[in-house]
Length: 116
Length: 112
Image (cartoon, rainbow over all chains, first blue to last red; front, top):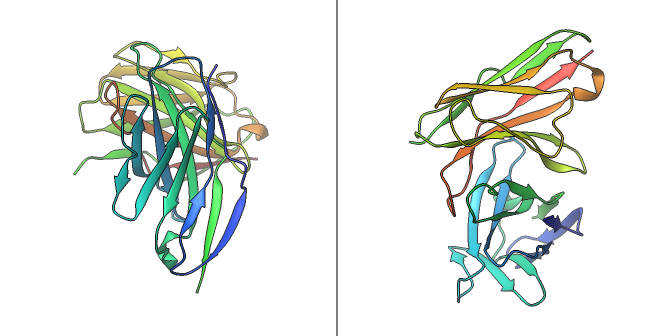
């Protein structure tokens, strides 16, 4: 069974600082994908970044990067130069990439608050 | 612009009522999903569908059923609503593989 663990229920970070949101996962399947989503107070889920288990390099998307450590089964999200608009819930998720087993499993989320 | 829409943003129902939550996507996606979101529990998968008329149970299917008669539409049905089904319900769709899931705006259901 696949499992995602986010151990930080909430974080407070000063504006312009970098922040790391932790995510560990558990799976015995070698082929999987890892996702990060942002959920602002308005409720919509916004896709941020994706990392495949066979990708050689860590994924980056603008101010977001994914620190992928396969041996440790961790996929931490790094947000550089945080902004007030980054205040939101953040969810880590994983799916296996073989047909018939593609459901997405989510962690419990981290509520990030950026302090001016 | 890709879009997943849900029939209601807010819904209030009484215990025992039959409740229909509708989801429509305009991206020709094969896969559609229903989640519920509760504080401290994240998103939990209720049901999903790989194709028309096909459905698979997720992690918490008890008390729910689904219907997918057309590719673009996926309905979640609460046969007899109970107070413990008060929650935020999110619909999503995607294609196979690495593509991200696209989410609807959510329906906040209150059962009294």
